[in-house]
Length: 189
Length: 237
Ligand code: SF4
Ligand code: SF4
Ligand code: SF4
Ligand code: FES
Image (cartoon, rainbow over all chains, first blue to last red; front, side, top):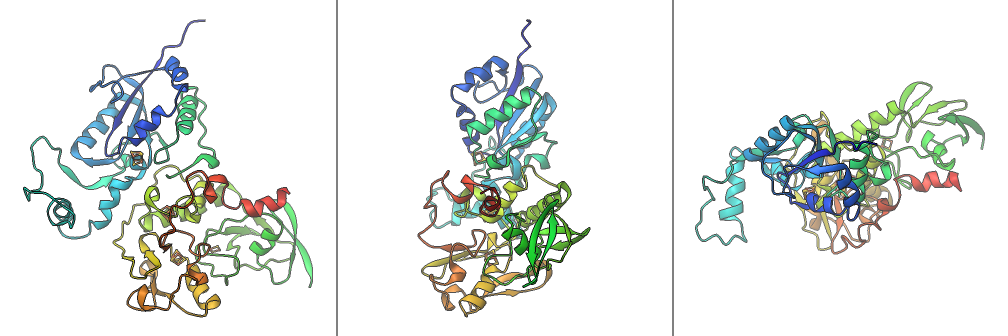
């Protein structure tokens, strides 16, 4: 029997806490089974920063809070056949989207940054400045879910999803058998 | 009392006069999803999550009287899609960040979303309203970001506690639940009120201070079972 070519997977962490990437490792020893079927391309796990080939699956953690996130997400859409959002941040903005609910003033972003860096009660910022190094990506007006920026194919809910759910979803997708989640396994936390 | 029969999803059940469709279904061990209705409280018929088709007409099962010979559709893909839309709109109307919510795992709204397969983003926009947190009371806090205006606290306070701590203000989309005073500390709300008890607020809006996150992940009510399991369980026994 000839071996099937391995599926190429790329991953990225946008406006997330890296918890979903840690959860990928919670697959534990089944990672060995999974690695027989896949190989990783661009990903913080491989430290490869650009696509070397077109990928079958792109896994995105986090939504978009700055222009770099948008750029990376679009690059993933261009280079991956299937794009999977993993975790509540990718699905609905998650905790970073808390700032959206205070975005109803005339200058919401300025207010948010001033509170975070200058006026907040617990701030110890001796420069009294909002960081503005040119290397810092510009913040977006709001935090956006991935599906608001590009077309997403699948979402794995959770914060973070368990290793079990990630493993089952990835392996059933690879086998072409994914039919949605068992209700008992859906979690938003 | 006269009893009669009706069918829910093809199963014939017994009902008696004065029962709603939901009462009869509960007694027969058939769960109809619900959020604003709660055992021991007067029916309100506000959330419409309990919508069923009774002889082809959409009605709220918690308020519609059971009738002889009625044919009720409950768990159909079409009805569950409507219910999921309603639940999604409740999520989008407030600010629901489950990962940091102390109701997570015990929350009926979240559990309903699980039951109804709410796993992907939808067409509805997030309203992301600016809503206050009232932490004035020594034992109780209100995080109105999570309130779904189900009115359960209003009915519990009025009808069970005989107090009237909570009430609706505003109309339409602006209708909100408010307290009868400048803040909760200036009402006669007490931690021992039924309205404040864990079973009344289906979400994480009414918070009993110093009691959150007591049960670890994996042991919370809806970590173990889908919402409705108690009623469905009656049938399996
Ligand atoms: S979903 Fe949760 S675990 Fe995943 S990146 Fe967001 S905050 Fe972190
Ligand atoms: S109230 Fe329920 S749905 Fe809302 S954030 Fe808390 S757990 Fe999630
Ligand atoms: S505070 Fe809780 S019980 Fe009262 S209306 Fe809001 S969600 Fe319902
Ligand atoms: S449970 Fe019937 S309308 Fe809310």
